[in-house]
Image 1 (cartoon, rainbow, N blue to C red):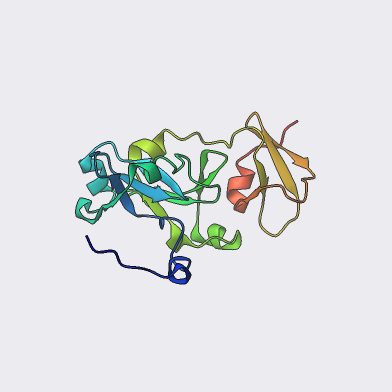
Image 2: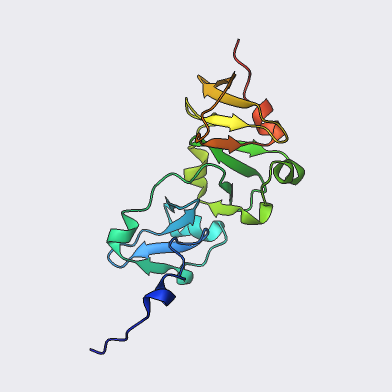
Length: 178
């Protein structure tokens, strides 16, 4: 076996995360996942993978130890869609929020080209309201809202709080408490 020395300075320039929309699997498992928002999202069948527009021959094998470190919930602000369905969802607090137009996304600072096609079975099981404790904000405002029991109330977050930017329409879909 021949060992090739690679400078640490070069290794430090390589990405530390797997890019979104990458098909991954481990060498000892037939399950295939797509990456979205830093997470691994499972396909239930090869047919579902194909219907999502992916080619199974483009799957990247990664070590099981690395696979096991990947979360199963994408980061807030991840954009997803399913197969041929043009509906785009903005993920926030574990929920999928329907985005009515590309303009809404752009106004909230998102880029539609960063949408990941995810498995239909996975996407369909997501709730439609962010979990309790999620902090959200609409475009063009400093008003922050706290989601509790499928409603929102105004709040003043701490300076290091994680706030999910929503589109005007997705924010309006969460009723104000009271």
